[in-house]
Length: 84
Image (cartoon, rainbow, N blue to C red):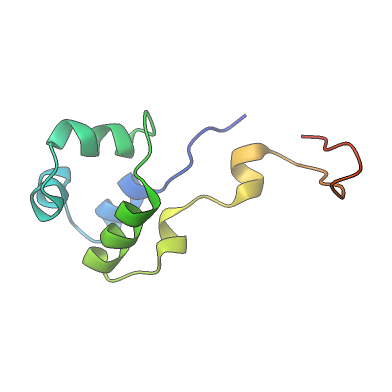
């Protein structure tokens, strides 16, 4: 199962920005940004919106598709079993 939930590292490279630049813009430690880029931890939703704004992109561009994160999933109604 692929656990990479965000595409921050890829998007920063595409935009020719560094972890250091993002850390300075957000007032965060570079180690925190590094953890986000390696998907060791994840930024909060509000922070994702801040990052998207700084990079001039939609927040969806920072996220992996659900299918890639969870694998093929069969979701049923709330009364039925959910298979992942």
